[in-house]
Length: 257
Image 1 (cartoon, helix red, strand yellow):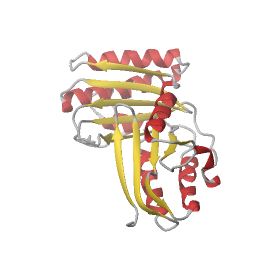
Image 2 (cartoon, rainbow, N blue to C red):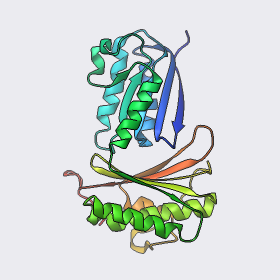
Image 3 (cartoon, rainbow, N blue to C red):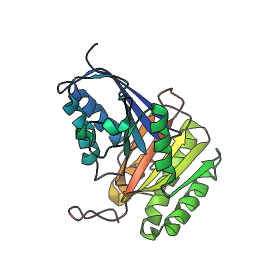
Image 4 (spheres, helix red, strand yellow):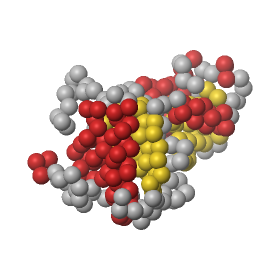
């Protein structure tokens, strides 16, 4: 069996990323698994599933990179990390995995990921390609912030989602899906369209000259805690996301207000 190769697939509709390592997993190749996991975590899907069905686990200690990466992401929007494909009963998983959920099959892991996603407070809406789309999204996200007791984030969240929807409709030219969810200490916003072309920030905006429209991703970058995008594995579209921290970190007071 060859050295480790890793296939990554992203299901934007389900908001789940699946990593499929194949080959020998040992203390040396675990570094590749770790770097790929960290990259996927920066995309902030609601869940990451690691399917080990094609791995020869030569060193159980190599599996420790998975819970270690999951714990290192504690300061970001929560991402469920699940394992499957190890063979045998799930209660015999190596102790190095700690409390990390291990499932008997990929189907079981994906079902658990969907259960975790449904358990979040979230709002989802379909926005038709029209001049009124951004306003519709802005109102819905503002109302969700009020409902969830996040009125202090209402303006920024509505502004960000308005820019994301405007960009998607203008540049992708398709209907869009808008999703907002409470994930740990973060409000996570995502806008999905049917164009796989990555978004481009035309020019960084000076914070003192930011307008409430027409500055696109510069506005998103300025008012969010973090933002990014993911392209569907089949090239069927992309999702552009942004997060807002619900309360400032004690060691890093917010300067966004």
